[in-house]
Length: 597
Ligand code: SF4
Image (cartoon, helix red, strand yellow):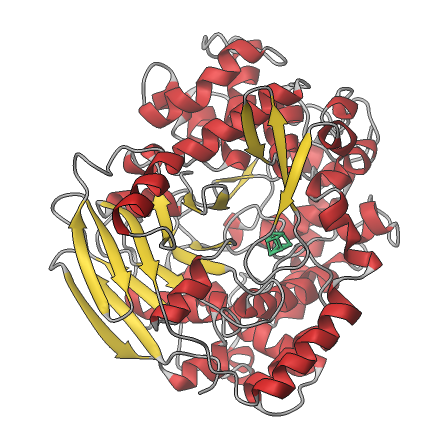
């Protein structure tokens, strides 16, 4: 099959053995790559009910078919496992240059299973796979130091996917890092890598990706680059990057501020893209990407790639911090320690709130940078109050007797769009397969940024959320980047080369629905139910006292009605279980709830 290497690399850490298996071509046709192939492998590899940090939980790296080619933004890698933060499936994405290198080495997918008895890193150089002892030399290193040492030891062009000190200590919101600043941030894949005594996967490849008719493919990619990638619609990526939306989200009352107490941050003008442009020193890009959205900033004697919008929201506004240099330093600490900035910012904001209400005494306060800057280090090391903050928002709030103060869904801290300022995001979060996530459905794009729909209504939102989840499921299987305007015609132009025929938008959405329903079966098998498709009570029922969304409330009744409509549109029963007819329509009938493929 063109675009695929046809090989799956299985790394058994317990036995320190590497084996190569053929890629299942039927799975590649049905599930494409990235998210789809990852979930299909996870469905078979994960024994039902396995603890996320048990050796039996596989860590899966899945490339997309277009990684290693000229397809714009497709250099991203999907990383997945059962999440230690949520107990759900986890698929998380990271850019940079790792995925193309893995394809050049000859592998579409890597399955990491078991647990090494001592810390190791895995070194993949084309057909050669070595398990290299990591104790003493690599274990314990922060991201930059690790990558520098790996390149010094093995070669300057080797690519590294690693866990940081936080992942080694099993913090459930530890991330994976590559190319220093690129993160597979959400859901705790860093802790799963750490639980396996695996510090890093290092790869160097010398092959290429066959694309079939190379001239026709190159001509199409060049046409698409001019007509659909480097366009005015995408100009914000290289001009400002994701911080471009901060002021609009704040004005709409949707920017989490002081632990979700309100949605408009008075200090947003001091941490917005205008402020960042004053300290921007350069822009960078992932491999295969002409958009170059990665904004690099210089603060005195240190350089920070970012902060991105989500980091500004959770580590800035949600903590009441409008000191841009402090937010950047917090961001840098998280990057070096291997912590997801969304969850870390949310947890620190919660800890400040707990202190404000007298439920905790961490010495943290909204807007105070002193303790704030120390927090990521304590979380990663487990020292002082860090051990409690390392539990994550849900467990921390419960521990302190204030579960009402945690803003999370299924255990994952909510990203930087408060549903009270964009109601549709509430349904998007509640139905997201990995817990609160803005990357599966993003209705804020229509109501806040596009202004084409009412932000304070759930009318039509169930349909939009279903369609966007199906679309992103196929797009994240491709694997394109969320930072560019994508549509079915653009994806179809690529699939024409992959499948050798024209595709329709309906066909792509059906493939996306298949992948989404596969994830639902997996989550149901792990014990989730309708009761988990929920929002925190205060997000549904307590309006903001001020700001752009003052007084607006979704309401429990309206939310339940929209959830029922969502299930019906999905072809699920009232408990959120796909019906037999739905599974047959999507060629998933063999994967019954509780079954193995
Ligand atoms: S748009 Fe930005 S994050 Fe996405 S692939 Fe390009 S450089 Fe990477």
